[in-house]
Amino acid sequence: MKKTLLLLAILINTGFMFAQKELSKDYSYTASNPYKVFDADNKLYFYRDGEIMTVKIDKKEILIQKLNSAGDKPSFIAEKLYESKELFPKNYQLEEVEEYGDKYYFFFSSWDGDNEKEQLFYREIDFKKGEFVGENKLMFQVEGKIAGSPTAILYIGMFAPGISIGVQDKFDFLISADKQKMLIEYRKKPLVKSDKKSYDIIGVNAYDSNLNPVWNNELTMPYTERRMNLLDYSIDKEANAYLLVKVFHDDSNDDKKHRKDTEANYHVELFRVKAGTTDIDITKIDVNDKFINRLWLYESPDDYMVCAGFYNKGKVLDNVGGIMVFKVKKDGGLYDKSTHEIPLEILNEHVSNRAKKKNNKADEKGGAEFNNLVLDKLQIDTDGSLVLLGEQYFYENHPMSKSNYVSYHYYDVLVTKIDPSGKLAWMKKLPKRQIGTRGRGGMSYKHFYANNNHYVVYLDNVKNFNLPVDETPSTHSDGQGGYFTSYKINDATGEAVSSSIFNVRDMEDMTIYQFSVKRILQTGDDEFALEVYKKKKEDVMIKIKML
Image 1: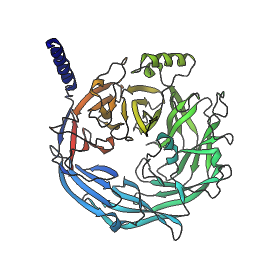
Image 2 (image 1 turned 135 degrees about the horizontal axis):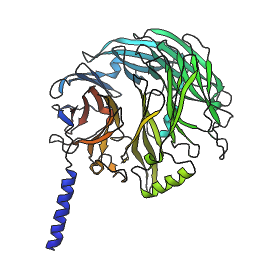
Image 3 (image 1 turned 135 degrees about the vertical axis):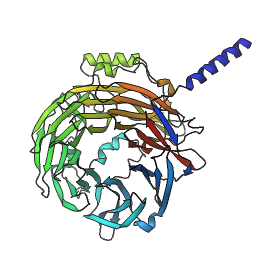
Image 4 (image 1 turned 90 degrees about the horizontal axis):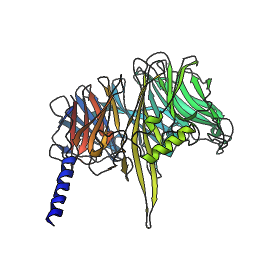
């Protein structure tokens, strides 16, 4: 009996010491004094000149808070609470809160039922005062109903039934690389119900840095809804609009018409619309045996557009086999087109032996791919190089005797850098296994760039600290504590260093609750901030310094 108790004591003590993993000396953190929590459906964070502004939006109330982040630790400055009914129409819907042209704007829509018009408004927020200023200003009205933002429908398949994809479901907002032009797009609800006969009408509205209208038009697409899917859109500094579309070769609206097809049943086209016109100039982009998983369109700091994204080999259309990149001249000419397969050794990192055998077998047949990889972010550097980030995401339904539940899975992150000539510079797979039952919750990650390094931060199981490539990650269960973890990736070499910043159950003698990567914001070249709930109806702001 004594031996059993002694062994138990050793095991408990060993587990305790392991759980108390030494924290990284590359980071330090301080926390503000607690301040009153405000429960809201949407919490947005902005930084300028040593201060943080939070905009917390509930259906009935909106709270704007200001905090100082310039001192040794963050400190609360002031807050102002508004009743929504005193500022906005009863049926208003938040579309976006955006920093643009050195100002901050609260964009919202409102349906005018009497005149059957959809309306888009904005109201300015004074950052220094932390207050709404001026009146609501009408930007434009649309005759008839809007079917939803042109690109939002592309993401519906990524979410389980009943999970909201956000409030931005009517309009898309995009800002040019020089921050001087904004493009707002919408898709009108088709009058003809049959998508084999109806043609999408896409509204495009361009504005200058003061939100003065530059031009607006409604564009009738050259293909029926069944024959065309919008992939992405962009605007350049001359306020010209660009739309990237997938055009199907028949009415199947299917990537592969037949199971044995080795080539895509579509091609990609770039629509170019000169500012102030309705004429669509088209450049055809052949993808041949590459099946597009996701493709994004961006304006570069130089005088060209960049297209980049994921492709697969057509066997499992949700998989990702590699990276596709090409550049587009303003006249529509394509150049520097390149593709980069994800190497087998990357796929086999941090997976089980069974998964390795499966990958090896698939690779012999030319089909090893990354499962459920979703493109999250594309960063264009000043030298023309690209950094793409994707995360494994999927959900599963679990039937039970009395009820069903859904589990949400946020797994490995793939970070890829493409150099200015289109060559692969480096590729890194960051291992994690996050599982929860409340949607995204405290899972997924946040990326930011500072001091020539990429930082990827998220909550993780402490057992994954410096995980060898031949081991699979231990599961982090959402809402069950965890260590705030960072991967610092050298932009030039791709060298990655893993660090544990703090334990959410022991952070300055308090326990952190309601962690969310959406509440993280960069506040300088060597620091970022995170707002968390500490119970007792109080929030705190944590400032993390990168030493």
